[in-house]
Each structure stands twice: as structure tokens, then as C-alpha cells.
Amino acid sequence: MLYIEALIKLIFVHAACDFGLQTPFLSFHKSPLVQSKEYWWPEILMAHSLITGAGVWWVTGNVWWGVLNTATHFGIDYLSTMKFIPHWMDQVLHVLVLAGIAWLWVRI
Image (tube, rainbow, N blue to C red; front, top):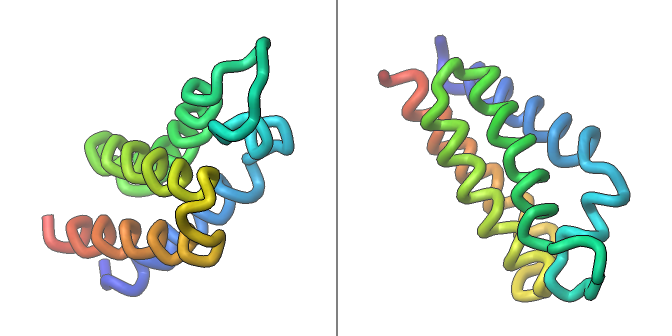
């Protein structure tokens, strides 16, 4: 498989998981800045991150790249929801992670 093909597959699944499968509930409650007595933000953010990691696992067939994506997605979205980075930077960082996973995917 070519690198660009792997990267495009990962970007497509990222778009589906990060935008299509992220409900308004997940988007709102994943932030530490939202105080809720009913929901604990880390579990909501982890649920969202697991969805994106599952997408990477599904596309690549490698569970560890899914785990890597889950962990980095959690960290990046935490920074974004805390307003440490703007939304566009959030997406740039996600694509950089996906670029690294694509590079590994075509070489292993």
C-alpha cells in the first residue's frame, strides 16, 4: 500500500469518527470546563477517544495503533477543550498523529 493511500484512509475514518460519530452530548460533556453532577468529563472524553481509536484499529487491523490514536486523541482534545489550543490546531495535531500511524502502517 502506498503511504498516501494509507493516510487518506486514516483521514476519512478520522472525519467519520471525530465529526460524524461525535454527538452533541459527547462534544459538550467531554470538556473539563463543563461542570455536571451527572457526568464525569474524563469518561465522556475517553468514550469519544475510544471511538476514534476503534476507527484506526478497524482500518489498519492493528490494535496498538488504535490504542496510540486513543491516547493521543484524548490528550489533544483535552488541550482543545481547556482552550490551550484552538480548534484548527486540534485538527492539525490529529492529522500529524495519523500521518505517523500511516507511515508505520506502510512500513510494517
